[in-house]
Length: 433
Ligand code: DGY
Image (tube, rainbow, N blue to C red; front, side):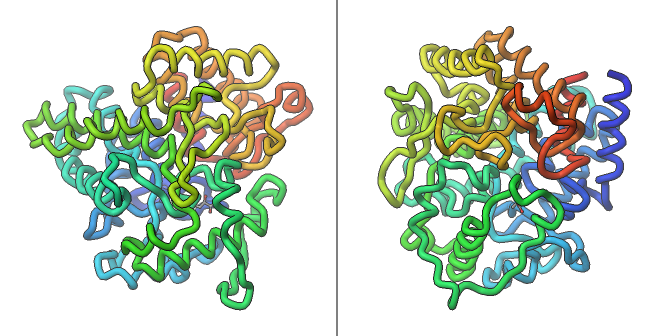
């Protein structure tokens, strides 16, 4: 265990740049939004100052309208990533910062609960309290952005218009929406992928999916990334289980923080009062016994058993009966010889145990689900979720994601995707603490 801890710290040290941590030196050479949140949770255990700086650096990329972009391109010289800052052309929006350059879409709203997590760990540290108070209004402004620009019907549920926003880029959940996009090669800008030069192509999204990612990026750009035209025009328009659960969890954290430090929390409470019942009403699927996201373009639930639903436990949204159903689902997967928690339904024909978000295990998801199971007192299963993540990292290395089928994993010596991965190392440190 001591060796594992030392190795985790070594990865995080190697990935540290000037004020932030890259997810993985080669594959993702800039600052990624939700990666940074999880990274801080690990870094604070050996270098608190760096953990605080990580989040402050992230917010230097915040737009005037409150958006916290999914990538902050602190370096304009790094050319090994696609789509780089020039492709995003965020100058179409007058409120985007000139420097640092950023992308024009967002990622799950982890920041509120990251503030709370560090405050819980260091309740008496003055510099943590000052940091929380500095960031609080920025995080609230970000939530206001989501409830303003991403909730046109004022339902209390945010939408995303690009799969990259969900963090679960190629989940089978998005297939139907993505199939709606008709690609015209003559109008799609020319581009060259970089990811498949660094990670194995069969562990990454497909070429057809990338064409659609670029299509949606162009659609965002056309509407200055926040125009009402996005909701009117985008073929991909989804209210996601995980993005909304994380937003709700962060709302709750901000309410607690606000009350502790004497900030106004009226607006946060209004959002929260609307969001939790809306999530319950719109997402629960009685037949599947899980929460399912909603396809706003197709006006229907997105049918599939997927990892995002489990984050409802982390946010305390599920009632006892729903929580028990989700727990039973995981318990059965464990009993059948899968590592927890596969990112997609192992019985679906669309399951692929090695391709990115179509089946593999993601350690930061285990971290979220572990906490969720503990919330409801399912401690034995929470222990398995934690132990599986530790085991996979110990046996297969500090990878981005891992094989979910135990029989198949037995013949492997490595994980999948990027190596020397920051959030893998960070959540491991927290698990081992
Ligand atoms: C990537 O490049 O694969 C990222 O997931 C997009 O943010």
